[in-house]
Image 1: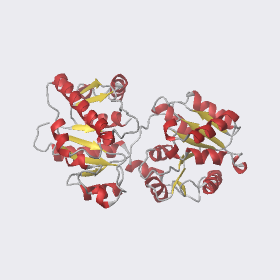
Image 2: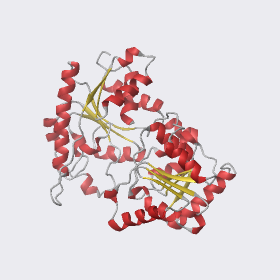
Image 3: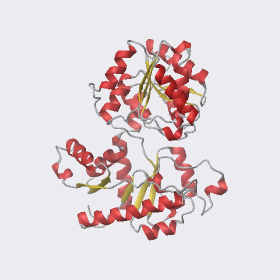
Image 4: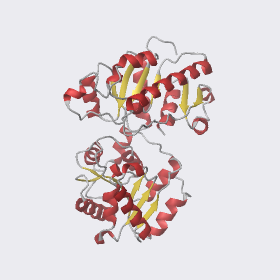
Amino acid sequence: MYLRLFSKAILELGYQVVACSADSENLDNWIVAQLHDSPELIKNFKTLTILENQPKRLFNLNLQPLNTLSRWYQAKKTIRQVIQLVDHHPDLVLFNWVDSYLSRYIPASIIDIIFPFPWFGICFQPKLDEPQKINHNHFFNFHQIFKAFYCQGVGVLDNEQTTKLQLQLNKKVITFPDITDEANPDFNFFVALDIKKKADGRKIIGLLGSLNKRKGLLNLLKASQQPSNEKYFFAFVGQLSHYTLQAEELEYIQKIRALNPSNCYFHFELIPDEPQFNALVNTCDILFAAYENFPYSSNILTKAAVFKKPLIATTGSCVGNRVHQFQMGLTIEEGSLDQCSEAIHNLCNDLDISLTSLQPDFESYRKIHSSAQVFCVFQSLFESKFASLPM
């Protein structure tokens, strides 16, 4: 999704884009559909199919530095293919998820040798809450790769993270909006239709996307089994991330699923695309975003703002602070079952009276985290980077 929206914004700024993706055919089709009235922009767009670099494992050894170096080598090979494709060295390589290219124990100078191209990375989950001595130690600092000569700067999704990261780096750090695809919902998506039918008029609380432990999956599932919550309907839709769960936790989830409670809906499969995801968001009355051990941004808030759906979030987190600031829902202490049930009850009551006690400002949040804002951020970045280069 981010690759699609970023590519479109950069094309609209007048640049040539070569997008490297494992799903390049769908990406190409999406761009053509979005820019069908601007054939001159489509001419500036090319795709290159690349394979995902699978991490290597050896017993219980931490191979992250080696796997990270392998990704940088693969990135270099990819850029060599891009040069052959367009007969031009890239003026800038944009990593729209640079997190997988970061590691401790790798000096920035090595990255300059491996990848001698100007690059900019967007970091979704920077590790900024570690002891100061680690953050500033050259060898142990997780973000030291950003000190590479060819690195032109870093993008993050939270102003607070921008400030913290700027203290570590002598680089440009930019706050990006946490955008989402606002595609019209697929009203024929069978999962959304099934949820609506089985809810039978009950308020629907949805946990959508990758279903892993840090999303508060277990807390919401336990809340659904409380007698006081039998009058509500809980939808769990998305791939179940087994690797994030202990054996007993996974057993508990499968046990509840097998019991098939009348107030729960389980669909542990990948949501096909944004129109289907948006159909699910549109079907829910409340979105659950009370994540655990997750201090980062989440674009489920942007989805919520687009479709005007209140949320339950975690107090003190980036998501929780934004929900509180824009009055988009209620916050609970991390992992609190009692507060979770109370928030569900209060929000459902508010929905019955049109959220008069909340007065959410969905529209302001939507504007701040819109594609138009991404356009402005890229425009500012490229104007400073390419000021001396002809368009």
